[in-house]
Structures are given as structure tokens and as C-alpha cells.
Length: 309
Image 1 (cartoon, rainbow, N blue to C red):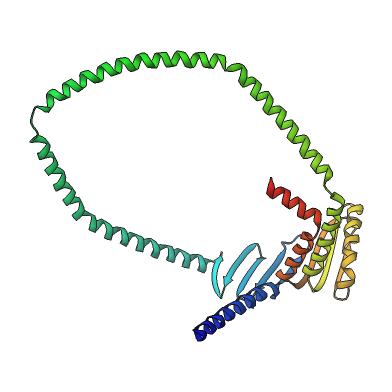
Image 2 (image 1 turned 90 degrees about the vertical axis):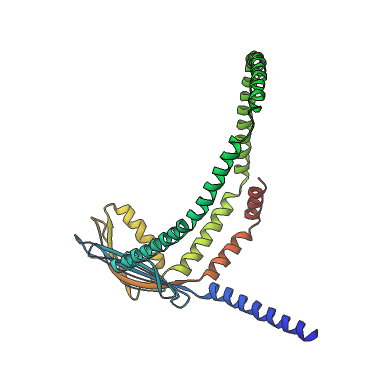
């Protein structure tokens, strides 16, 4: 018995370790991405984006080159989606094979059903013969039954007329209470709207805005590309908006200043780019950010109120 218990505990321990290992692998393995962008004035843009996860077990690639859009998704090296003609032809062949298999199954079923149909037809013929052999005495009973049903129908017609009259009276009497009930509903809706407004005023919006800013900054620091090379020249046509964008970009300029340059044009509207970069995102860090949001008491109370409502 002890040996069996120890063996079961061993198996459970191994399974638990495997589960923990898989969870850590999913949370800590980064989602790696890379991109390339090329845009010149009076020319179509060119771009390429590639995403991989779990040591290339998941692979996604999309590109737009010479007015041709291309994408593909692979899992474990097997393509599950795409717009390449070869892949689309393979999908059509698979669908044809499936349809052929389904047709073959239906033909087999139809081949089996005729024998059952024959047996059913024999049973129906035997039933018809038995019905014909029934004595004619039943015809008199049928006529008596018809007379009784006619008497019942005449009584039912009188009852139905009385019921209609009662319904009309009730409808006339019930018009006033319906108006009162509709007014009560309107009043209840107005009260509920006032209550929601009071609840919204009680919400700590400033705290939530600060928390949202903090979480967004942390996410951008984590998710922005680690390496960025190339240059971008842009102009919005409005000097104010152009200056505003350059001010935001200046926050990240120290990180990419060595290999990346930004040229704002305050006079005209334009966009030119030739750059490439790569970065990574960890799901574990996303979980940390979610926990930091849930740590706030106001957020927890709001979630509780939503669940209770």
C-alpha cells in the first residue's frame, strides 16, 4: 500500500511540476516582434511586420510591398491561415476531399435505408387489411358520436360569446391602471438615472487617471522596441501640431538617439521614413500590471458593485 501511495504522490508531483513549468514558459517567454518601414514622397509605402512566440512555435508575418498585401500564420510549422495562391489551392483540395467523404457516407446511408422502407410498406398494407375487416356496427356508433359533438359545439359557442363580452368589459375597466403603471415606470427610471449620477460623482476619477497614466507609461517602456534604426521626416501642415508631436517624441529620443533621427517639417505636410526595429513583450509583465491595477481599493469596490448589480 505504501509503495502505491508513494507512486501516486510521485506522479502527482511530476504533473504539478510540468504544469508550473508550462505556466512559467507561457508567462516568461517573450513575444518577439520586428518591423521595417519605407516611405518616400509620391510613392507607395512598404512595410513588413513579423511576430514570433514560444521559440517560433507561433509565427505571424504580414507585408505590403509593391501594392501587394501578404500575410501568413503558422503554428508548429503548419500554416493555418494566409492569402498565398498555393495555400488557397491546398485549402480548396482539402474541402473537396471532405465533401467527397461526406457524399460517400450519405450514399452508404441511402443504400441501407431501402430495406427498412420495404418492411415499413409491408406493415402498412397489413394494417389496411385489418381495418377493412372491422364489422360495420361501428358506423352507427360513429353517427351517435357526431350528434353528441354537434350539441357540445352549440354549447361552446354560447360560452365563447359570454367570454368575449367579459373580456371587453375588463379591457374598458383596465385602461386607467395601465396609464398609472406607465407613469410609475417613468418615475422609477428617473430615480435610477439620478442614483447612477450620484454614484458616478462619488467615483475617484483623479486617482484612476493617475493610475492609468502610470500603467500606460510602464507598458510603453516595456513594449516599445529595444532597437530602432533609421530616420523619419514628417510635417502636419500645422506648426502647433508638429511641435506637439516632436515634444512627445523627445521623451523617447534619448533611448534611440544614437541610431535614429527625427526631422520635423513645420512648413508643409509630408511624411518620409526609412526605419527598422525590434522588441519584445512578456505576458508575465502584463499580469503584473493587472495585479497593480487590482491592488487599488477603489477599483476592487467598483468591480464588486458591478458583479453584485
